[in-house]
Image 1: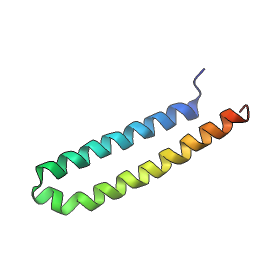
Image 2: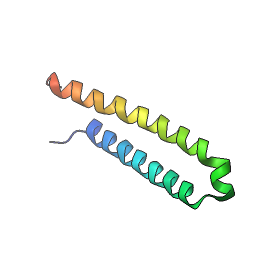
Image 3: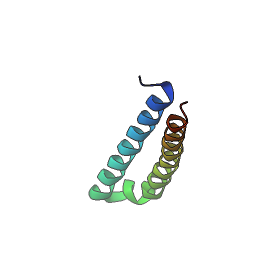
Length: 67
């Protein structure tokens, strides 16, 4: 059975993938938008990725302890 924390971790992980694809897309197109926003997009990805890693570690920890 899939619990709520696992679903949240999956949603956040998909969010990381979406932000990554958006960043790659803007990078390949280049232009003014990329010059202004490349670092912001990377910071957002890193922040969301940090949350995803914490949630995944928490899910693994709780599953290992019968939680």
